[in-house]
Image (cartoon, rainbow, N blue to C red; front, side):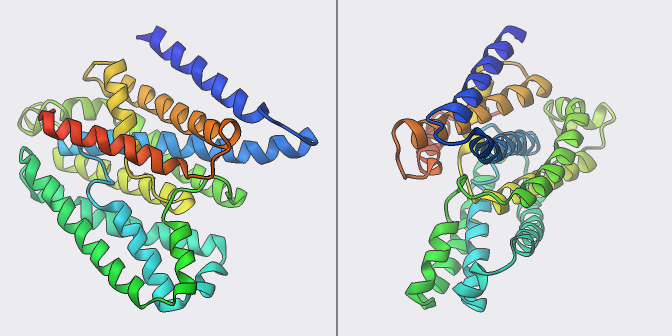
Length: 313
């Protein structure tokens, strides 16, 4: 297992080095800091989304669920659309980056906790009920979004369209520091509770018999999930199926039930996918298509495959 981590680590170093140096033209004192900001954002988003997916699957007791499938990305787009609808596109575009980040993060954390709390009220073994809950909430958010978008001035729709996809080319350095601090705290707390997650993976009844406070562990995990997803989404935008994609790959690389190696492996794979993918799109193929589109296509295909195969916990 350590050998596999070394291989992933070497691949990550190669991707980071190529990302920083490939096609560099101009003074290095300008190119390196500019690319380093994007590299840090990609790494932060990858580690945070992979960790949030592992936490969410631990609580839901299922390997094919992720926060995005429960309608979180639809919630973000609805919030953005509502802001443009009530405040106007120019007002939203000219808002302070710090204020926009704080409001978006706060609203999404509250909304995510309300959304994810349905897991605690539902049957933990009822897969279809959990999936249908996410579909219903997602359909509701999208319906409200479509209604507001039909009433918005077409000239202001570009603000919504820009924010509907993850963007790694324009990152506020100050916001990156704030997001990194919040995510670092959440990642640290997640690492501390890794052994409790192992116990929770045995099942609610077994975990309770072993003395684990299941309700508290689930609430902590969902709170950390909400914080990680809200911060990264407010920072760069939604990346719907990234978590499901990288965690599914991580379970193939480290086929164990312990969460410590799974968290590390999923984080490494997520950073390789984002940094390597952005390198190929931006520098090699020189494409303008957002990387999130391809990730959602591949991740969505994996979700359908797992669902049809009945691959459940």
